[in-house]
Amino acid sequence: MLRWTESLCNTPRSSIPPHTLRETINPYHSDSEDDDDQLQEFVKDPTTSGRIYLQDATTVIYRFASSLGIKGGRTFSHQPLFDFKDEQREFGVSRSYVCTVLLPGSPVDKISGSPSSSMAHARRSACYHACVELFKIGLLDYRLFPLSPGITAQYDQDTNIGSQSVILDPTNNETFSPHGSSDNKSQGTRCYPRKQPDFWPNTGSVTIASLYPTIISTDHSDEAMQPHAPILILTRQPLPSLSNTKLFFSGVPAIVRFRPGASFKVDERRLHDIYMYTIRMCRAIANKPFVCSLVHMHYFFAPLGLDWTPPDDDEKDQWGFPNVVDHIPWELVTRAAGSWAMPLKYGKAEEVAEDIEDAVIQDRWVEFTRRYDVIRTRPDLTPLSKPLDSPVC
Image 1: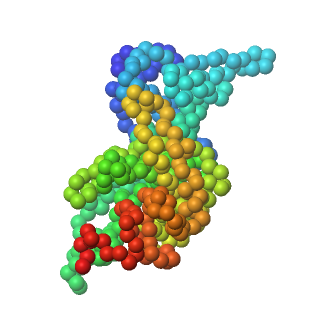
Image 2: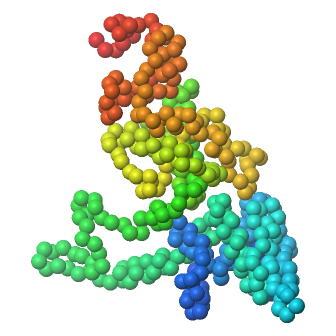
Image 3: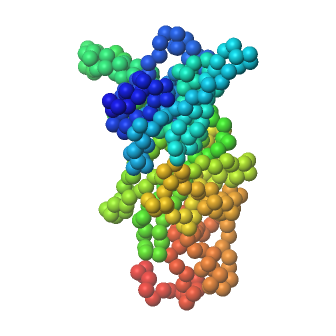
């Protein structure tokens, strides 16, 4: 750390920080910079609502570069982080500098900024361009963003409220807080402001040009021959990293894993199919009517074929996410988008068995009714036969 601080002070090229870098993420802007923030562009994190302005970008790149040694298992000590090119304008009257970020092997290696009148401003510009590129591909972790002022303000407000004494209402002997809500606690309608994520309001107004998938998979299976296929949650901006969780089937835990996938562009036809597939899925699971316009859909569901397998640790790319768009059964998505049910194929037993493989069936043309999982076909029976192995009298 001392060697890095020496290079930071002695040369404008600086160097990549060690992975032991620790610092606060509280933003600091001078009074003049606070005034300029209203007019500046920024990168907004959907998870924490933190913003990266031009003056914050250099610190963010330092944080990102310090994590490279942990992710890649490599050391970048004494390697310069920035490179400057000195350019002269017409007649050699004024000089301008162009800064380039040097992070070998990363997606932002050799990204340059705009020409600036000083090295410091050129470095800020290059770092901001790098932050924008990292954000587009989903590699800018929410922990790299400066802390949102709203979070610190909420913390200060909660601290002040917690230090105040409660007031006893003499009319009904109930206690209440001066800043509390009037929600009915007995009916479980209390509001938890700090438990309401900012991710959905922040991403609700983003234009749907690309979708960011999160792969949900599990190794659990009801039977050896019936594994559960993965499923995708598609959002307008990348979800934060989610840790594995457990679901319990008859008391037996099953690990559910969340993996980010590579983003992909979507056209109007496929977007409509995914939208209708999500509507069908929500109606089928809830077994109730569900209507939501495409504009107000904050996320979508999509199936993922069983042929998709997570990459091994040896094959896993440090910077890339697994491609899933080619493993989505788009034909099934289109069929589900067009109709909520399809008639069975009557014919030979083999044809019926092939048609109802991995299917959910029902016995009437009503959308909201009881449904059944198909176990197997019985070619030795007719609708009037009584199965000898049936437990029903």
